[in-house]
Length: 84
Image (tube, one colour):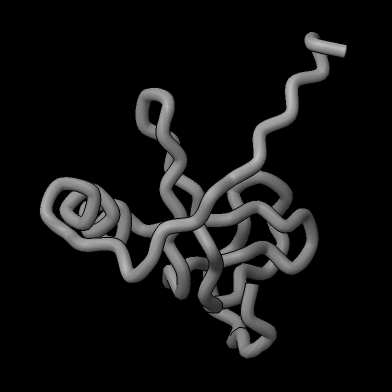
């Protein structure tokens, strides 16, 4: 999460804390794939840390998954606690 954040007048629906506008790295799981989105505009509660992403931004995430090109791809190690 970026450190530059500015408060909004909205309150967190979970705890009533102050929401701050910032950008985050958002993970989206679709079937067995994991997608990362960087610099996603969001509101984050300063008390409980709950993250709020508005509907228009989530529609853009869907659009990028359908038609966008990733800027890069990463290999992700996977660990399984059941196989030890």
